[in-house]
Image (cartoon, rainbow, N blue to C red; front, side, top):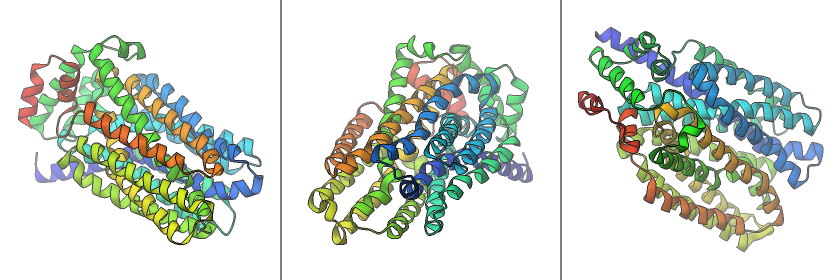
Length: 465
């Protein structure tokens, strides 16, 4: 391969990773936009705390359904096709929410958007992990989390810009822009070579591998995928996850990572940071400005994570990140117990520092590492249903937090933050006890180590790299 050929290969690969990860931008924007819009919607429709929870959590109901429905679709039609359809559905949902004349239509639009986000959250990590080279897979798969963080920041900035206009509908409607960019960009990208091999399209798989790797690596990678797939099952079924003891163990690891990522407390900050700051004495505008600052910190921390993930691995950040987040949540609990609803001043600044510390810790650990690992650890033959189940559980945890946190916050107690601190300690113990290290290993090598696939060529292919 000549120097010019390598440059073309790099450009093709970069475009694939960027547009593939763009689904995360939709994911992040929709998560973040409700934080500021909720302040305006609450005033316009005089929402109770429980109604606020329903507006926030309606997206998550759609996400849960979308994640499960995505499994057979990703298996039958491919990862790329599913991303294309999901981007289109997301755009339709954003327009429904933007045109809402009542709370019911807002909820309907967010459910439709949730169907797309759930499917994207299942398909994008798989797509990125399957198409990225092993030595760079952490950083390239981690671009999904960078897009999520960027989407959240963009949503915060949009909310800040529209604060004085009261135009929350515009905030929802602008989500159609990245949806269009996703559909157009992914249309020109290739399908996952592992999906192509799985469905007997060997020539196309070789072409994709050849377009992104040196010629001497293509045969080894292709043989590796074939042999590992041959050692597994031929079709993805959720029932297949339960038949093999080692596969069940890997599924439990994935489900544990997915659930803990959500219930560790990040969504209390994504959805309700402005509400938390208002409770502690900040005005609406000040709360939104502080929230945008938190979003910028998150993006910066995520960029740092991309540089580190393929050097320090996945396991250690999960261990120490969980401990760090537990400390931040405990600090927030102390603020609420000592300042309560009379906050402001020093208490408000301590809260901002604790929120920023939590978001930095999350971005460097469970934010990106969880999605990277979920795209890596499942065997190819059952990757779609395993990812679907894990993603469903992830959104179920998100739903629990989004639905009930406003009610707990309205009660005015700090116990909820101490609860999240305890969950952080549970995540710390979980990461130490069961999470494997996957840094620098091919997906086939990871499968061999976790479920015992007999594939002699895996070792030789690893050595060739």
